[in-house]
Image (cartoon, rainbow, N blue to C red; front, side, top):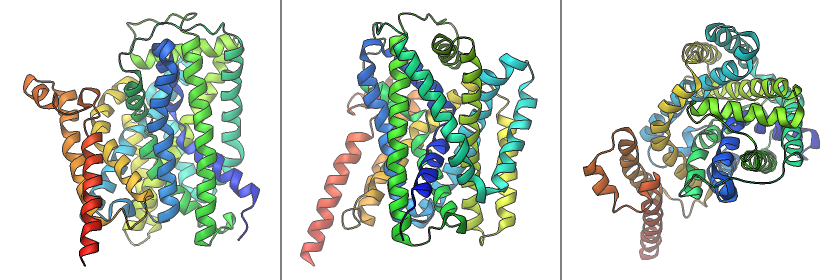
Length: 435
């Protein structure tokens, strides 16, 4: 089946927009601002966890063409079930409400002065309306919302870069590369990849997308993934570089919370690039980017539980309603509070997600169940000190992590996982030869 250009563009734009939410827009400029002359190293690290890993997740979905359950089933069905439930609970409890909090703090409250309760109620009512009409999600987002978001983003970045003198400040980071990697966690893009990828798969099953054959779906998803990934790369690199080059022109109050620093910096950059109209542009950008991400998260969660319980449309609707109610409740918190809660959760679940994505991209003859189990187990084991160390630093834990490479950068799981992968693949190949 020939893939039409229209289908490719709609899917690519839809995928980009489902990825691009609050953190994706707010985090890069402040990251570049603080990185100063090290902004390029920070960008490389950021791209690994915010672009490369998520796109590999989409490629894994293109290969599996199932649900999130398929990502972890080689470890064991019970592990995969627990992992899926954790991922979807995290998705609807942190990144989804975070989009409402960001919309209120940056776009709604400065303009209208209304309460977060009203914003959250209206926001998730609209999200629920879109999710319950999920067959139109991909087309509507891909045709209308995303092109508008991309055009405005490119305008802010392009005009912003041409309006600056290209002077950067001194870097505030001792390890800019690892800081970039960890800041990429905050975008939730790897988790978004496994959630959003499932939404894309289900959307392509609708007749109006006219894509039914496995090979055609795989090609469409892979091509769309690369286009969405390249778009994310351009936007992220642009936002980080703009933040770095404006570091000598814009002063932000260091006493403010990180979320307000991010918001004020992006607002100042927008106004510098587009004048007073820049504030309006930023408000619309934040609202649309957050809104499309929340739709993708809740639709993905509802899809999963629908499939888990006999493909029931009633289950889909109930899950969507419950997720929206939870989003409404948590979305009334401030953006920074949600991020503080998210960090230890991400330090645990993100490494597991990255490993599952990487293993599912590899050929099956390499990524066997034995390899899956060994690598995932060691990843979980070495992620625990990172979480404990963040939540309650102690001298005893410091003594232990001192001997774990990269542990001081909260990446202590990387080398052990890689070594166990090499060893387990070697053992698997030796066992096959001896048969």
